[in-house]
Image (cartoon, rainbow, N blue to C red; front, side, top):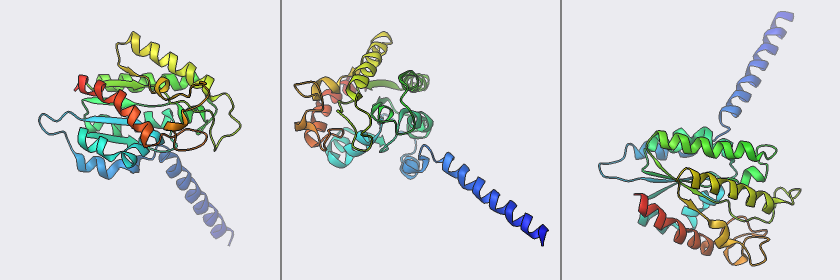
Length: 232
């Protein structure tokens, strides 16, 4: 009887361990675009793919403005809620293996919102640098884009200094882009409110403004598309 009890406990521990391992393995949500990536296959001759890597801001873009992606042959690879740590983990699956000509990286919102732990600007900046280095090694041109203005986060109301953190991170990445001759698209300046405290409500889908409305995405497109066309 004792032997059976020990076996039962051992099996239970194995199941718990397997479940925890599976949860950790799915930290980056590998499965989200697995089928779409497989269906894309390798680029056709002369195809100049553009991939957008990001969080919910990138994730919501094709749903809000599908014509921008269809007309300009752009591939969205945003996942809602993700931080730069998760971007880096799935960068090979969702960017490198697609063999893009250009990759556009938007980052920072959920790092600052502490979705996967306490915000550390040095680590977030390092994740951005690592994605740039990986892309360049694989012959993809990079466009870095600013973190959008956000007065706060409805799901993390304890964070009250988001705009200061966003500004500081943006300036740091902008300087890095200039130093490394990487195009930098400044969404922040075009979308910040007149008082400089939040996203312009005319461009925000929610309150506090974190996610762009269709009008906000139109502003982003007007800034991004000319840069993409120069690199294609």
